[in-house]
Amino acid sequence: MGTPYGKPIIGYEEHIQQYTKEDALNFYQNWYVPNNAILVIAGDVNIESLKTEIQHHYGSLKPKPLSVRHRATEPKHRDTTAKIEIRDPKIAGAFFQRIYPAPNFRIAGIHQEAALTLLQDILGDGTYGKLTQALVENQKLAHFITAHYTGYYYDPYSFTISASPINSSDLSLLETSIEAEIRRIIFEGVTENELNTAKQQWEFESQYRRDSLHGMANYFGENISVGYTFESLEKWLTTIQAVTKEDIKIAAKNILNTGPTVTIYAHPVIQK
Image 1 (cartoon, helix red, strand yellow):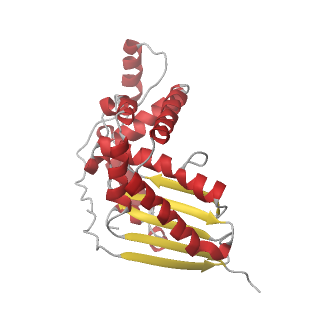
Image 2 (cartoon, rainbow, N blue to C red):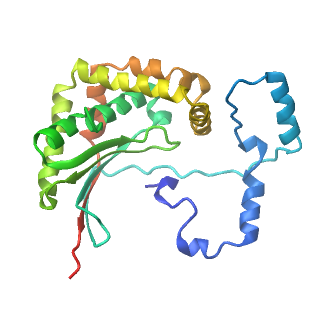
Image 3 (tube, rainbow, N blue to C red):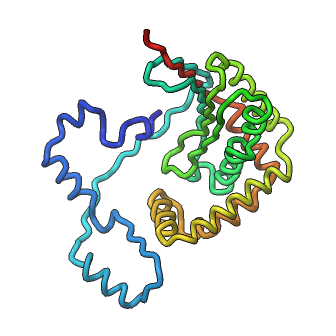
């Protein structure tokens, strides 16, 4: 992966060992400046008195030119698949994971992000998800199955399906069963009820977020910092509601049926 997501946030251990106090102070002075910060305030406030308070606390902080940041770009992927097998005594139980490269909102646009977000829920929700219903409830192949799409990152990342088999020797069976359900979505699509259920969950999520001042402030602050506009965040629920069954089918075909993948088999090792 060419983006910074392939590296630890604070660097590798050999890098950390070389950090000095001056390195930390220089980083702080270069980047912790008003023109590289977002202030989010939520609550029943008086705008004029709030401006006075902001000026009192932050007015003495002066902006400064930011260093040029050269972001690495994701290299073109080879149209191949890879499988990684991990055996480690620290692993609590057998584990399966399939990772598909996926575009984010900056590349695919907000509408495609919404379609992939709903596909994530339709596939991997722990209660009503298609994979949960088929492989956890009906076939009893897994303890749990989840799907996770990271369309809200600054750089493109992934669409990931993870599962824990009931029988640790059934990883290959679990993999082929997951692939069968994915093919079913690609060729048959989803039902209106499945789509509406996923949309309704986002309505609930939107309402729950508004119950908390901290939740709303966190939502806007985090998302604006990676490039969303205030307007796009306000219209997110409308964007979700506009997604159609055909949009979901196309999203599944584009992401889960083409291009490279990485599959991980993780096994616990019983020490003698």
